[in-house]
Each structure stands twice: as structure tokens, then as C-alpha cells.
Image (cartoon, rainbow, N blue to C red; front, side, top):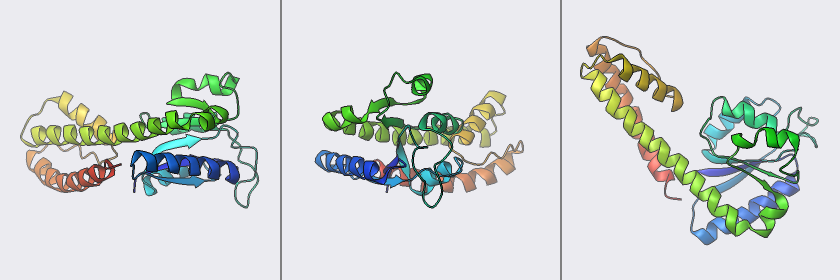
Length: 217
């Protein structure tokens, strides 16, 4: 099920935010779920976490390095460090900051453009009815964009497998495949393209159905 994920080193804080968002989602009639997690020691783990838990919106605390993470000590990065790492592979993914740190803080302000929005906890608790619909819209837009990209991928694959040798089409297809994490074959032979197309279209149809089901949020 598509989810909003809260990353915070303070379980009490994340639990309170989770409860607030769940109430708001139910009032909106959304089937989105909410999950929480302590920060991971290795930032690379977030990519698998997002994929495994079908996360379509991420909410980061800024001071992830204040408290212990699981059985370990505090992590050695802040939310503003993490968002930079995530953006290297998830340039369009919805990421919000929710923090007690003022938005004018140097580290946060330097990464302002990498977030959908930076929200103070005080503002969130006082105006949750303003922000929870934003989380919902961000989720829907992200999932819809995936469907649009899969559709474009389908059209390009049909053209190329049909014999169109335009190198610009191949470049567009490769860029899309990288973005939506589908394999790039690079085949020039039309028969190989057709074989690969048949394999990929089955995968595409499965992914498309999954994303469509997630849009019912």
C-alpha cells in the first residue's frame, strides 16, 4: 500500500506526527498509510526502504543526529545532508522537512530548493489541515507522473521496435528507463528489440496496474 514515511530519531515525535497525519488522511477519505522509521546508519538504505514500503512521500526531521538510532549511537548526518543524497537518484520524489529548527537555519536554508517544503513542527500542529492535503497531492502527483512516464516509455519502445533508428528516440528511452529504473537493452537489431519489447511490455503492464491501484488514495 502506498505510504507516507516519517524519518525521525525521536519515536515520540514521529508517533505524534503519524497520529496527526492518519487522522487527516481518514478525514480526506485517503487510503494512504503512514509509517515511521529511525534514521539508517547507511544513507543508501533509504532507497531500498522507499521501494520496499511503497513510499510516495518522505518527511524528514532535520536533527536526525540528536538521539540514538536503534542499538547504535546517533547517526552522523542531518536531514539537510540526507536530502542531498536522496536527490542524486530521486530528483522528483516528494520530500518534506518537518523540524523545530527555524527555516532560516543555515544548513536547511542552503538545501531549501531540494525540499517540497520546509515546515516547522509548531506550524504543522497548528495547521495540519493545511499540510496533510499537500502530502496527499504530492503523493498523487508523483504516482500519476510515473504512469505518464510509463506510457511514454511504451510509445518509444513501440517506435524503436518497429524499426525507427532515430538516435534521439534511443536517448529519450534510455533516460526514461534510468528514471523509472527499467533495464536498458541498447539493442540495434530489430528482432532483438521485439523480443526485448515483449518482455518489457509485460513488466510495464504489471507496474502500470500497481501504480493505478496506488492512485486510489
